[in-house]
Length: 271
Ligand SMILES: Cc1ncc(C[n+]2csc(CCOP(=O)(O)OP(=O)(O)O)c2C)c(N)n1
Ligand code: SF4
Image: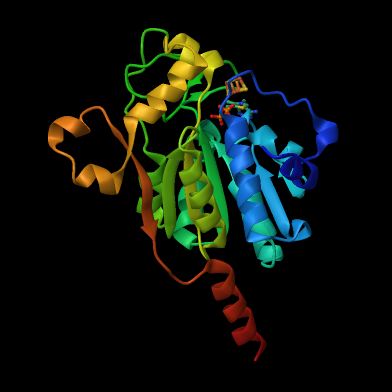
């Protein structure tokens, strides 16, 4: 991260941060800051909202209007903020547990409404903050403290879940593919409507250690080697697609936005 980015957009008095060495979450936070800088948003018009988790600590380090709320409820608070003041650029930061377990209902209904909130999911496939319990995105057979012999659940694809619920912008990248991540976050913030960017992050302390994923460098190399853009994958022969995960922009459409529809009703009732 550049010094200018730190000076302009971070609460340096809050440092050092709480993240473990090698945690991917700082990379996603920096990506968000770069996108905000590039768009040139007025800091006072940005509101970053989070729930609870290692990922949800990010807004505490970011120098905007910030809300650190309760576990799973970031989108509920963010909806209130956006309806009360549609002028604000509202960005939600949420972990995979926060967004797709306890907060799953808020995710689907925010997407369904197409409210103009940008949600960035820091997906490290585990509950980091509370000690490595498995989450709805932990791959089947992988381990967590609550699945010491392997998890038998089928994992959520959060991007697909959001699209199925009505998100009008949805993209996925990783903490290795930072240029794409920057681009998708910027596009998501500029998008009018509900947007989701799933940022595949790494938790070396719990997910990596429990599943013997090797060093932080090994975990980053895994992302580099395993994720392929879905448009590139379409042209690959089946044997080259084996074991690959798809990333890229999956949805980008324009539909009526919730706070505008709400304002229309207010104007109609006033007449
Ligand atoms: C209502 C409630 N239930 C449970 C918790 C405990 N809790 C705090 S963070 C967390 C999970 C965090 O995992 P995730 O959202 O994936 O974020 P990460 O820490 O991995 O970034 C849990 C279960 C809580 N704080 N409040
Ligand atoms: S426990 Fe995992 S998610 Fe939390 S700070 Fe450490 S590496 Fe990051």
